Picture 1 (cartoon, rainbow, N blue to C red):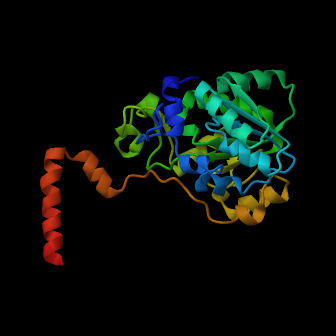
Picture 2: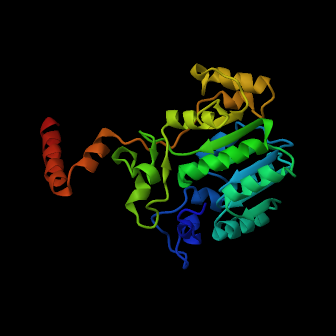
Picture 3: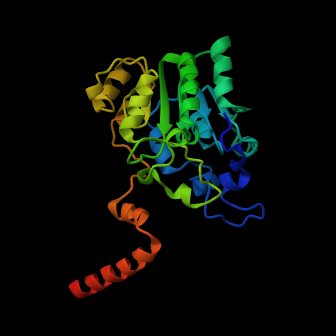
Length: 294
């Protein structure tokens, strides 16, 4: 692992230059981070989980917001792994300022999970967190990571995943970037290529289920839960998981979820297809028609 590691810098995580000037790119949720919180979509996912007395692992923890959330909501042990030295430095300072104790590893998550799965010297993990992580890991490596992680999870373990929803499934490294899978990260040289693994909602469910994690919602995947494919992501699946003792706060888990939707609209699709020289007169014509219609 370590794909484009050089791009995961302090500037990327803090959305600012070394002199403190804002940058037009970077990891999402910087204003929430500065306020000691976590962005709303991630909070919406984590608020569905019961962290009390649980052992929690955050893969690709970035600035450390999810580790703080887990610890403050009752987790007895919080562990994080990230391959970026800058992420570890930022998260360590952030957690220290908020009096959160966590074990942070600056390591290749694939190698670390394989090592832990082989030795099995630690207690099982109850909850694993992967927020804005899946899209950054080459799919081939992600499969190896998840297979090892599956062996480390408790029988009633849950993985919380937040990854953008794309129109199509796109293993960018193997297939090249599909036109309908483009997003804003592709427009800036500093972030281009970082999103190398893009999933639709359906393809993510199939992928996770093949690795032993049953989709009980758009973001939550349960170990060893037997549910018909027709019930994937359903309220019924979440009710069954809660009844069997998976770490869910059921009332919250039954509420509608938020998603980062990167599906390309027809307007954006036209803009991607047409050359700039043709788009300009087309826009002029559209404005003229709208003025006449009004």
